Image 1 (spheres, rainbow, N blue to C red):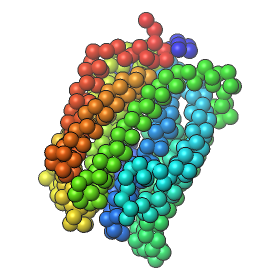
Image 2 (cartoon, rainbow, N blue to C red):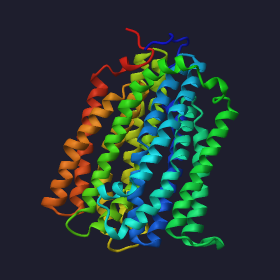
Image 3 (cartoon, helix red, strand yellow):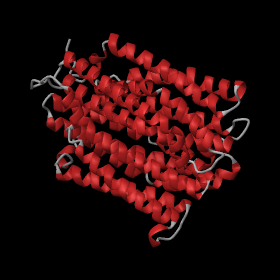
Image 4 (cartoon, rainbow, N blue to C red):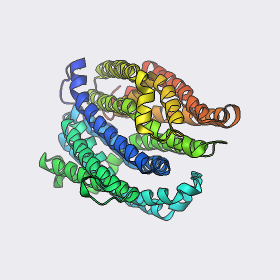
Length: 458
């Protein structure tokens, strides 16, 4: 869908350029990690059931955010390509389009989550003793979805404009508010009422609302979101065609990935022995592991922006060079972090899981998944690069195949049949990441993914 041809020359992208775009996003991801870290830590101090319930509900929220994340990813791609082609008005119009779409899908998502909440928990095979905590958390988390959408769209716009320090400030706002309210309302510190699990949920709701307000204020202050951002219906229909080409596979990828995680949670919750503690160990392990894969998302975002700008300028060679540089930086940096974290696996797990029964499961999860760091980081970074090119169909096919044809069958076989423990489920995750990364790297090196860009010319 070639709208208009590029109108500027793009210089060679250096590792310094990559770092200048990535470090604010790394810090932003660190703040996101601290939000999850604080939530799990506080939940563990309330009781292991609340900690396990938090893991289930958080993963459900990710699943319900699939559409919003897909639209946000498509927004980065379309806006970056537009700006790379020196079409700032088109970039603003794409922002207005994704906001309109986001409002519609946000309402649908919230209604579905409300009316089918009991059935959702039932499908996840949530143990009866955890059901009350899960439903209570779910209602609060459901109300936070509009604010999550707003922060996603705002962050996408700022990244496309390479104003990556603004999402960093948003993450800082959310982290500070969440920490104060988690400690105050969740545990009763600072003279605030000790509301337990309700306080934990309120902290999430209020902090995301604060982040959303700040993000939209900055969009309007920088004049990225104005009355001109909302184009006539005819333009939006045409632009939505390309947006859908990027968003639908990206949404399908997120849907398949998150649904796969929900099935993985169900497999863990239905283990023959010690299922509740295994579920709490899975939830805690995922939070600790996020210190590695959240930076991978930051590198993937950098890849999306740089590749989008290069292909908007129709510079295919520079797009591939930039992708290789981002991939090398991400894998090398995050693998080094994994090596540094390895000696402290047990200590960190004990800090996050005060329950002696949960601790072995957390250690098992972290030990196995640290080994998969270069594969996890590599595939996540390449997914961001493909999104920037508009080629989100490739991650969709590869991720879905690895999840449903490798990870989940192996998780059932190793976890329920052979080992009958959580370690079997976790080992299946490692094997699937190796398969996934190998295939998507081959596609990046050998296939013509550049042809999916909006400004592609033969």
